Length: 178
Image 1: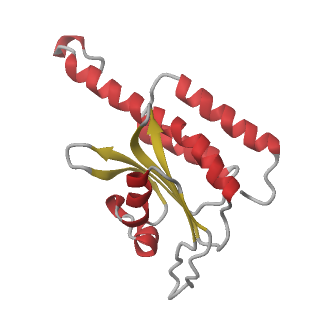
Image 2: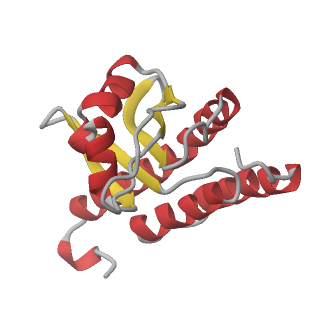
Image 3: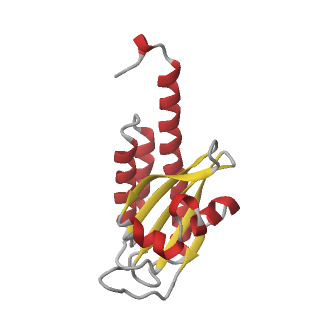
């Protein structure tokens, strides 16, 4: 957690997440950007990604990314849910890496703190939320706990989007909202 986070910021972020899932669905990327900003109030992060499980392909697919993707790919080989993110999803357990002991090289920054949390809705893993920070020791067990509380809210945004797209596909062309 950020060193200067106050309880009111934490409560405000949780309140904002609650309101976000209660609102009518907007554009998924815009809703996930709002979610990132709510988290940024309380967590250090240079990178943020949300993955959703594609059951037909049986792999995690990126739904939203913030930051330079090569940083996380290079750090933990997590692209398309491989490596650390894939492990988190497959085992349905959060993964916290506090210190990766990597150094900045040639102006490139590497993730030195990593936190991945599975998104579980009704007992089913549907995706994962991943954050990364260039600073060592940016995440703690308290941050892991916080992300575990927030992941279902992110999951509800994904499910809501999925249900709306299914609803639109099932309606006759004349009844679809454009």
